[in-house]
Length: 249
Image (spheres, rainbow, N blue to C red):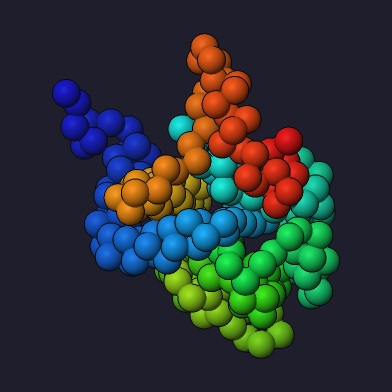
């Protein structure tokens, strides 16, 4: 079997970062999974929110074959790249906008909110986490500690995302995200935040599923719609969440 070292440097770098991020944060991930499992067992929902490319994590966890039904993606057209990269960039710096977006969702004290932002510096992700805490949710961040520590906050408080949540996870992305460098020019390329961040988020969800199973509770897992006889099973697993997560309907 080929080793990571024999692959393109981008692949080798991603594998190294992912293994290091998962190993170094295993205790944090397991503790977080236990807290999430407690909330899910009592009917809680995991809300996932990100701007720009970070919204991909919310879509990755939502309604996936083999994934849980308890994930609510908070997706705002203005903050997503297909509305225009410039518009998304301007919107994520806009004070007050996070509350407008989050208040359109059913957030309850027994829920959890995962906010994804590589830099963690802009107003919207910081305010989203603060709003979640204000409402009594367990707040989680998926961010780059290295990038975030290298820049100033654009939030009025001077705080970054990792400063205002209950639990912060590090995707180990370099400042600026590119892990490779062109000789001579210094230009960096090969971003890692999405692939490593998504894998960490899926690891966390897997741990929640395993914790629930270990406690004797059946995890509400969604089967692929392209397997025979999956529709009826999926309807039953989604049913308890339809009033909380309209996108499941």
